[in-house]
Length: 208
Length: 208
Image 1 (tube, one colour):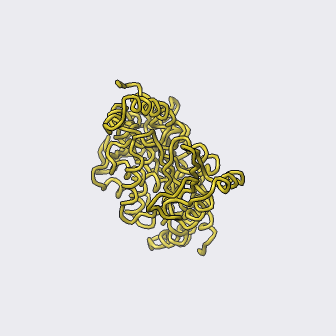
Image 2 (cartoon, chains in turn yellow, blue):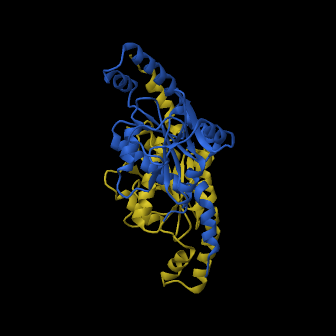
Image 3 (cartoon, chains in turn red, yellow):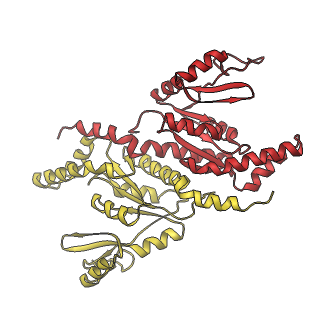
């Protein structure tokens, strides 16, 4: 029995190359989970095989910029000439239905989320050692030295942003990391700040 | 891999009759747990079959009062003419060794603990409904009406203290309650405030 019945907004982030996507995938493969994700809105062109409302909501630049002005995004960014954003109304809908909304975003998106939804649970995924991440960034093998050193410089900056998050989860093994996130979600539901209201409601309902 | 290697002090409390002891027992029956408990100090007489340093540390009233004066207790209380207290040095010892110290205390002890150790994780166990607790308090069948109404009055006061705790855990089924506490302990280890220091230490240790 959960006292807090609203879903949680769970932000998963971390330095580039840490394996956020793999951890999120492992989370969605758990049995009996109650997680959902949010479909982003973008101004980039639809690619072959992509489906409107499944891969993205594809919109015009004008439409997107109007939505920015009206504060309709939980977070958005501009990347390689295109906008990408998380529509706030879809997030609220998911949470109201009692699902946990798992949002995998890059480190820059987290601050925007915290401003719009201070109740969000923010998790920073880190490698077991810094070396492990470097090896991974180098190991893809297909990129130039220059590209690799650029990536390492980016990861170095991103590493330092851990303090902004509620939790730090070590991705030593994907299954362990996913289990830790499951425990965090369960614990957050039991937090007094989320459940006290419901608890006091329950206390009102008495016969002796 | 846990970034925070120190054990946690976990306080389990809740209204009389809610089943704190049963939940704690279920916690200690979990496989592969890393929990320990603290042996209390008391001024009451040793009973037959009790062992010094196992059931309690049995001391004189003078000794106990000196320990109070020197601030040597995490929490203590005076009950039916005797003192009972948790020695602070034993607590620190357990936490330094990396064990989670599970402390089951009544609602009055929690505030003392928070003052001495603000880092403690405090959990308030509640029944699924208020009625369930009343039924339980009545159900023992051996007590007088007066005794029962006294107990209910006490539980009613204790119910209201939930707001002082970090977490509220519903004891709908003992196993569920114990699982929730396990999740809370795991999540607390991943909290940024506990692990950031260790994480930054790790970042220092680099070769590119």
